[in-house]
Structure formats: C-alpha cells, structure tokens
Length: 414
Image (cartoon, rainbow, N blue to C red):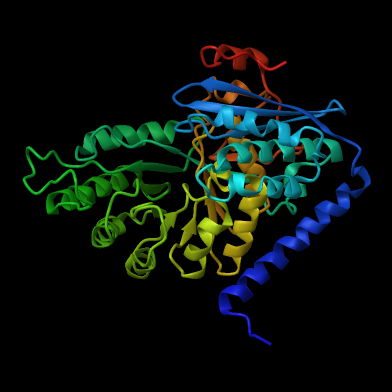
C-alpha cells in the first residue's frame, strides 16, 4: 500500500476537522431537509466610495437571506450572480455545501470563474439556513469562541514626515467614538524628480525611500504611543530583497503585520520572506478557495492568513481554510472592503475560528454605511463588533437608507 505524502496526510486531517463541525450542522438541518425551496435570487448595487453587490435569496417558506458579492473592482458580479440563478431555483437552501460544490467548474479557477458571484450567494444561504433553523450563523459554523470581534480601520497622517501632522492624526484616532485600536495605511513613495534612484517600473525601494519609511513610521509610533496597533499595507508591488528591507525598516514600530509586499501568487520567495522578516507577514485577500491558500500554509509561506469571504467562496470555504491553517497554528484575519453586510457576515465567521486576530472594516464611521442595517446601539464599540444572537447573520436592512444609496439605475428589490 502506498504511504500517503505529508501533504496528503495534512489535507486529510483538515478534512476530518471540518467534517466534525459540518456533520453537526447536517444533523441540525436533517429535520428540515427538503421542506424549503429557493424561489428567486435578486441583486441590487449600492454606491458609496465603492460599489457593493447585495444578494437576496427568496424561498417558498417566506424566509429570505441576504449576502454580498464583490463590488469594486468586481465589474459584472451582478450579471454573474443572475447568470447562476437558473441553476439554483428549486434547490434546498440548507444544502449549502452541495449547492456551492455543484457550481463545479464555475468556481474552479477556469477562464469563466464566477467565484465572486458564488461567494455572495453562499453567504446569503447561511442567512437563510440560520433563519430556518432558528440559530445564528456562527452556531452553524461550529459555535463561538468569542462574543465580539476586534475590527480595524484605515488611514494615516497627512504628512508622516511632519511630527505635528502625526500628532494631530493620533489625537483624532484617540478621540474616535468607535474606539478603533488599530490602523492600517500604506507607504509614501519618493518623487523621481527629487530621487534620482526612483524607477516607477521596477519592484524596488530606493535608499531614500527606505530611510523616509523608517522615519515616517517612527513618527507615527511616537505620536500614537504603544496602546494602539499599526498595520503596514502594500499592494503586491515589491520583490523579495525589497520586501525584506521594508520589513527591517518598519521593525522598530512593531507592526501587527506587513501585508502583501510580494506579488499575489505563491512562489518560494514568500517562504524565504517569512523566514527572513523580523515582522509578521500577512497575505491572502486575492486568493480563491482552499486551493489558493494550501501552498502558503503547507510551505510556511505566511505568518497570518487574510482571506476575503467574497473571494474565497464564502463562509464555509473560508472556515475550511481556517481548519487547514489551524494544523500549522497559523492565525486568521479577514480582508474586507465590503459594506456592513459583508462585515457582519465575516463577524459570524470570525466568531467560529479559534485562532482569530482581527477584521478590516469600513463600518464604524457612524455614517450612512452603519445605518444600512437597523441597529439600536453603535455597531463598533471599543474597536469591536458584537456577534449577533439573532438567527442567520442577525441583520435587517434599513430600506430608506438603502434606497437613498442605490447605484444609478438600480431598484430596491421586491
């Protein structure tokens, strides 16, 4: 008999871990099997700083679920979701894994991949399932490890080389009513007109840029103090050597992590970066499905995984990623530039992941985005969001606010 490889063995362990809590969901759903059918799928687009693709799944039991597919730069996501509609009408909404898997090659990375559309549908199915079964989605996903989830927001000082500007930024952060305790922001690059070494086409940082990066982040840390965390944000633009130099430059501020310094796809350079970096390396927002993460996990090519549930395939697929990562003691956080709908869906997932760090969000400004859903207390308090106790995702849209922020040409769903 052929001895399984280490990789095959670890995959089987992850499958067993997932099967244990998924079987509990299936047992809970067994009594309702076949009683409810999907009757319609609708999509409407909100417009804000980005656009947001909201999904609604209707059933013949009068129960509906809400989810979110990708917005910017997800051009065509609405059309993709509607293209999948005929395949789902008449299906049992409790058969979430089977429905998602049944989309087959539509989500397998082929040229016609519809993973962002399928993710929005899958998220809405968990809302439906929770409402039918009368329990929160976090319970269906295996149960809670926490009752509230830490979140962080974005934005750095106007001029990080100016200490007065940094102090003014720090004062604003400390006075924020949502109490955010972690900020993420990126780098400022030098002007080629002043820095003769700057080449806009390569993957390098110049000596002057590295010097300014170190100084700028140290100014921010001095102004902010150590009671708040900072995350250094990149966009996959550097090579290996530059990524290591960047990690060394920011090490004095003890960032929570350095995000996405190397190009997206797996290469041995990611493993070498993790081995060399003095700060934790986080990545994963653009990866799809477990298959996109497996090499990073198995080859120790990341310290922290950062999936976006609108890219991975939804809540179940992301939970499976977390189960595999847990075998290597790798924590999870979540990328999330989605609306309050995506934020609350991710909170339900985060509650059910043991080794969870924190969640990115655009919620908490106490503006119209918070008010897209009905709430009787601030959504973000002390840099945390409470895990909903109501069935499903535990949210209800505020029709007046949604209608006021529909993209031009969109109509509120019936």
